[in-house]
Length: 175
Image (cartoon, rainbow, N blue to C red):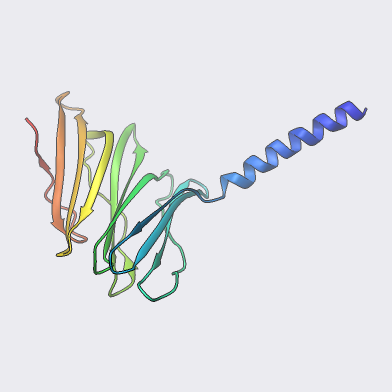
């Protein structure tokens, strides 16, 4: 009897600790700039995996965390670039309809708001490997990634260079 009770307690602990961890922040990262602003960002679970971010403006206090989520999609692997003005770009990926897609959002430090998450890759490509994001002090965002194109079978390097929060003009930069 004691042996079965002990097994039950161990199983209960394992199950409840997994459920508690599922809704906990994980993969926490931090982006900072030379002006003293920071953005902490992480993944957590709700109905799906979502990304949350909190902003610490220079000389200010932490904002309430903002959720980046689209119903039915798991958001993963966020990357953030922040410039000296405190403006920022966040890029992450999700799997949707069998494709790994990139999404992005821009943070406007003057308005203290994030833009609506926007898909920046196409529905004809799946993202391979990793991706990178940089934001200049003049608010030029540069995002690079490589893709496998479903229609042609080619693997290419892609780049998006635009003004903060503008997500058009992707170009193939490889042969």
